[in-house]
Structure formats: C-alpha cells, structure tokens
Image (cartoon, rainbow, N blue to C red; front, side):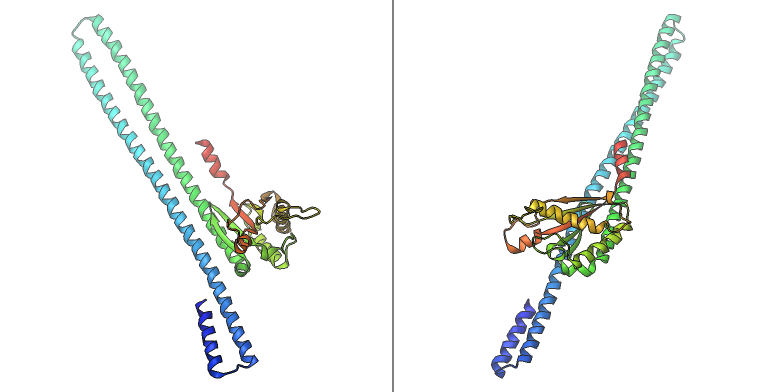
Length: 321
C-alpha cells in the first residue's frame, strides 16, 4: 500500500511539473499501479499464511508441553510404587527373621507352645507371601501400563507425522490456487482445505466452475494415493437469507447442494472409495467471521474439505486400557 501511495505522489508531481500527460503515459501509470496492487495482495496472502503457521507452531508447543507433564507424572508414580515395594520386602525379611529367631528360642519350651507358635509362624509367612505376590502383580501391572503409554505415545507421534506429511502434499499440489481463494491449514490433528465461493461457485449457484473443478481433481489425486485418510466435505453459507425456488429454497439447501457437488467431482476419481467421504451442509451456523460486513460474509461463503487420518490402532489401545 505504501508503494502505491508513493507512486501516486510521484505521478501527481510529474503531472503538475510537466503539464499535461499523454494517454499512453497515463495508461502505463495505471498498469504500474495495478501491478503494485497485485503484489500487495500477494503479500497479504503470504502474511495470512505465516500467521496460520505461527498459530500451528504455538499449538504444537502447548501440546508437547502438556504431554511432557503427563509423562513426568507417570515416572513419579512408578518411582513411588517401586519405593513402597522395596520397603515392604524389607519388612518381610525383618519379620521373617524375627519369627525364625522366636522359633529357635521356643524349641527349648513345651511341644504345645512350639506347635502354637509354628502355626502362627506359618500363618504370618502365608500372609507375607500373599502381600509379596500382590506387590509383584502390582509392579507388573504398572510396567504393563507404562509399556502401553509408550506405545500410545509412539502412535500419536506417527499420527502427527502423517498429518504434517499430508498437509505438505496437499499444499504443494494446490499451490497454484493459493491466490484464487484456496487455503490449506492444520487444526486438531486434521488437514483443512478451505475453498472460497469465488473459486467454486457463482453467487447463489451450486454448479462448480471449471477453475474450481481443476483444483478439486488435483486434490483427488493426492487423496487417491492416501487411502487411509477419511474425507468430510462441508458446505457453508453466509447469514443473508436465501429465498429460492425449486430444489434449493434456503441456505441449508444451498450448503448441502454445494457440498454434494464437490463430493461428486472427488468421486470421479475411481481410486477413491465413496465410503471414505461424508458430505454435509452447515448452512450459516459455523462462520469464520461474526461481523456483518461484506468482507466477513465473503469469508464465510466457503466449502471445506476436512482430511482425517484413520486411528483404528490408537482406538484399540485405548479400549485395552
């Protein structure tokens, strides 16, 4: 924007100092202004991307910090249980020695007293053996739980790596559409491909434009190569009431029809199993911006393709626990 301002000041200076400007010179100046405005638009898109990346990095740092706290607490618990086990073993050895000493001392006494003390000794030993067995079982259970936690940690790490790899693949495949209203970002372990209305549809319509079809087909190639990714297609509208006729009467109908239109283009790729896809309309009820401005409503009119790695193995471990 600053470049445009300086250029206009320079142009006006030339106008006043040099008198009248030819039509050719004026059009050249207009062209330069347009180029500068285009460059400024690209810089804004780049800035938005950097902000999104910074937010993702902050979220990742918070997640890793919380995970570290959980692991530290687990280590403290295991250390405490190990100390209790050692203390109980020491008590057992001390009690056993004391009873043995008493038995040796009573060998010189009457047989009835010896039998009574022998019974007490055997009972005490059985109790101690039972306690020792219980402690050993508890220790093994703790070791087993710790092993499961480590396994769960590894699976979560693998899932995060899959999400990052998928985001990079999608971003590289669709980078030619970044300036056309397409954004790729990561949120809550999922990859979002957000396509603005201007890339896909004319206002109030649900037939996908050729440029939008091209973007969807290129995304379908990536999804066909990653069969373990679940796909959700969500249509979103703004809050301006639509009163249509025929099959599409309101924003609910429009959001559903748009999501279905995108889904049908994805499934034209025969390598994508339709069972992987859920198509849904969200109408106006999940906005990005809550303001009632033209710019905010334009952002809310979008179609989102949400990609989620399958976590069947993770769910099995959780059920075991």
